[in-house]
Length: 423
Ligand code: 9WN
Image (cartoon, rainbow, N blue to C red; front, side):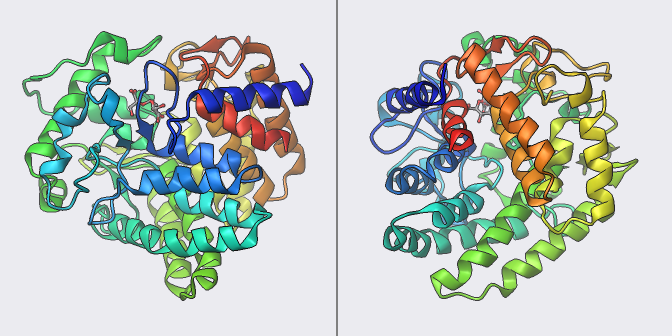
C-alpha cells in the first residue's frame, strides 16, 4: 500500500472514531475519551488539522478538575456504563473539585498535553488559531503541572507519583507485579467484566485494580490519604519523562501566552535531578515503589521515557540507547520496540504491555531519538512502525517477532501517529 492510501485509511479510522468533539480510542471496547489516547491523536493531527487537534485537547481539558488533575477518562454520556468502571463507580460529580457537566474517572494519565500543544503550535499553518489555542490552554496546563508538583510529589523529591497502574497507561506492565502483590489483601466488591480485559490481558490483575480505585474514591480523592495511606505509590520513569518534556514545551509556549518561562525551566531541572538521583540504577531508569519495594528489577519500554529530555547528559543517553538497541529490546525483535525486555522471565510476546510493540511508545522513542540527533535510530523506529501498520493494520499492539496485530482494530493512536510518521 502506498503512503497516500495508508494516509486515507488512517483518516477513515479517525473519522469513524470521532464523536464530534473527541476521538475514542477504538470502536467497541473503549467508548469514551481517554487522556493520552486523545493527546496522541492531537499529536498525529498537529501537522494536518490545527482546529481538530485543538478541539481534541479542549474536549479533554473540559474534564479537568478544579485541583488541576486531568482525568484519565472523560465519559461520553450516551455510552456511560458500557465500560467498567464507568461514571457510577468513580462518582466524580459528587466531588467538589470535579467538573459537574461531565463524568470523569478520578485518576490521571501521563501528562503529554503540553508537548502536544507545542507540536500544534510548531506546525500550525494558521498562526492566529494556534496562538489563540496556546493562550486558552496554557493556564489549564499550568494548573495540571502544579497539581503534579504538589499533590503527586509523594516521594518529596520533585517527581510525580502514580497511584494506580492505569495512570501509567501501561496497565499490566510487569513493573506493577511486585507492588500489586504487596498490597494488603482486601475484599474486592467489584469484578471487572471479562469483556473489558480484552484479548491477552491478565484478568487476574483487575480485582486489585478496582479495589485500589475504590479505596481512593472512598477517601473522597483526598491528597492526605494518598500521602499517608494509599498502598500503591510509584515513581515511573515514563510518566516523569513525559512530564519533563511537557515542562520543556511549556517553557517555550510561555512567551506566546505572555507568561514567564522561568518556573517551567526550574521544573525541568527538578524533575531531571529527581530522575537521575532516584530512578537511575545499573545503566537504566527504573520504577521506584514508594511503599517499600525499592527499585524494580524488570526493565520495560517505560524505562526509556527520560530520553525525551533533550538535555539529558550524553553519557546517560549513550547507555540507554545501548540497551534499547541491544538484544534485550530492538536487537532481537523483528518489529521494535517490545514493551518488556525480551530476556525477562515476565516477557510474553502476546500479552498487552508485557511484550508486544506499540505505535505510541515507538513514536515517543522516535521523538527521543530525534531530540538527541540520532537520525539512524529515528529512521528505523519510524520505518518499522509504518511497516507494522501497513502489514497488520491500525491494531492496538503488535507481536514484536512476527508483526501480527493484537488487541483492538481501528485503534485511534495507531492511525493518528501514522499520519505524523507519513508527514
Ligand atoms: C484502562 C485506552 C486505554 C489506554 C491504555 C491501555 C488501556 C484501559 C483498560 O486502554 O487501558 O485505562 O481498559 O485496560 O493500557 O494505555 O489509554 O486505549
